[in-house]
Image 1 (cartoon, rainbow, N blue to C red):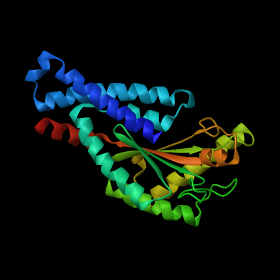
Image 2: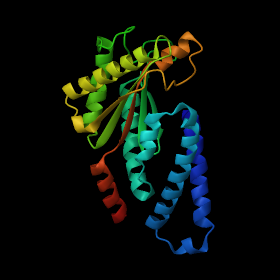
Image 3: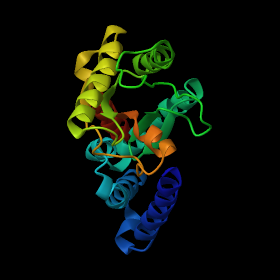
Length: 240
């Protein structure tokens, strides 16, 4: 998926440049106006392509990020801030799968890393208490969230398809709430957090193997700009 987004952004950037350079009316545009034009076009194209890739799997974490897009020069300002936060998460929490999408960040903690080791945030079988290993990762994540306070955070719980659907929904609810409660207890303000759960309804990949099922048992975060960051970005864009 990371490669898809990288290629998408490259195509969008090229498209934006062609639109800007191919129209006589844009020759007189200021740098800021051109940035808005490219940003708006890029946002629309990225949204469409990501929407097509999300489609069948109804990935609500990515949907939340797409829905928070500002676009234009202000969107670029937000994107730069998210770039820095994403790099910190990657560096501080090796068990996190971090994907930069548009103006937000998607962070996924599956039960196991690709090398088979336990990921940063995981739960014992049929349990939803925060274990010692998960605390280590969540403590680091809490510090990063506090260092970057101008964001909203969506927490999602997901399971594989083993067992009854109703049971899986309840289990994912309990796990998502456990993560949310831990972050609140460690100082993350409640208004920043939205907690949702989907049981087995949104598999990351098909449940055709034990390894795949481990990837589907996961907690996802969608990190987006809050109103304060958006207002600051708009002012910065207006002054450039």
